[in-house]
Image (cartoon, rainbow, N blue to C red):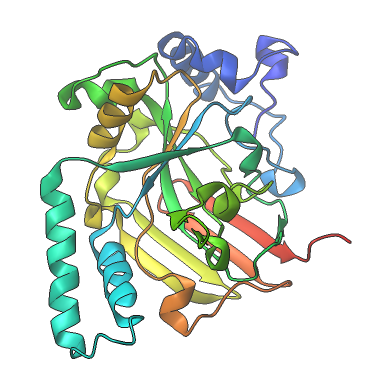
Length: 295
C-alpha cells in the first residue's frame, strides 16, 4: 500500500477522485508505474471502506438463480398445509426464478451509508433478533453521474469493483403487524455491510461474470459461486437504478448474493467469536470477527 497523501496532498480522498475518475485513473496509473520505497503492508493497517466518504448504498435482492430458488423452495416448505413432495416444490421454485428473470425488473432497495464498515472491522451482532446471516456480494462503484442510462452504456458509469458482506437478521425480517418486509430492521444496523479492502478499477476486471465469490465461516466454506449465476448483471442493475433515482460518483451498487446462506445449513446462524472470510477473485478478502452487542 502507498500513502497517496505524499503524492496528491493531505486532503485527497477516493470520493474526490471519483468526481473526476478518468483523470484520476491516469494519475494513479502513473504513480503505480513508478518504483516506490515507502510501501506499507496492508496487514499493518485498519482498512476503511474503499470509498471515502461512502455514497448512497443500493442493494439488489433475490438476484442469483440458485439463491432465489432456495428462497422460493424454503418459503413453500414452511407452509405446514402444503404436503406436496419436494420435487414438486422445487419445480415451482424454478418457475418463480424463470418468471423473475423474464420480468426484466431487478429488485433494488437502499440502505444508509452508516451501515458500511471496513474490511477487517468487527461485526457487532446487534439485536433485536438473533438469526444473523451472511451474504457475500460483488459491488459496483459508480464513477459518473447517471440518470436514465441505457443498459448498453451502463458499464461506462462504473469506476470499479469492491466486495461487501450483507449481514442480515432473518428473524426480524417480516413485520407481522403489517405483513411487510422490514429491511431497515434486518440490515440497517451499524457495520452490517463490511466492505473492501480495495477499489479495483473496472479496466482491471476483464469479465466480472467470471469472478468467483467464496465465503467461509471459521474456515468452513458456506458460499462458493461464480458471478455468472447472476440474474440481472451489473449493466442491468446500474441502468435500472438510474431510472429510479440519480446515481452519483461514490455510490455503491451491491449486486446480490449467491446461494449458501445460514438457513441452508440447518439454521447455522452467526455467533459471537465466528470469523467470516469473504473473497472475490482478484478483488481481495474481507475478514471480520463477530462480537456480542456491547452492554
